[in-house]
Image (cartoon, rainbow, N blue to C red; front, side):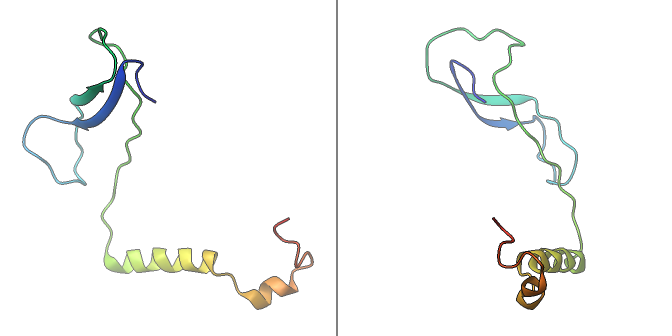
Length: 90
C-alpha cells in the first residue's frame, strides 16, 4: 500500500549495521514524494510486511529442498492409480 502523496522506497534503522539474522528496529523510512502536500508526524505512510529469517545448517536446507521437490514432483505411477485420474485438477 502506498500513501496518497508518494511511496516508501526503503526502511532502515540507525546505528551500526547488524547481521541480518539479529533483531533490528526500523526507525526511518525513505519516502519518494509524487505530489505536493504535507505529511504530519505520526501519519501512516505505508504498510510493510517484515519477515524474520533463521539460519539453518546445510543438512537442514537440503532436507527442506528435498521435501519441496517431492511435493512438486509427484510419482506419475501413483497419480495414475488415483480414482479420479486424469481429472485430478479439474
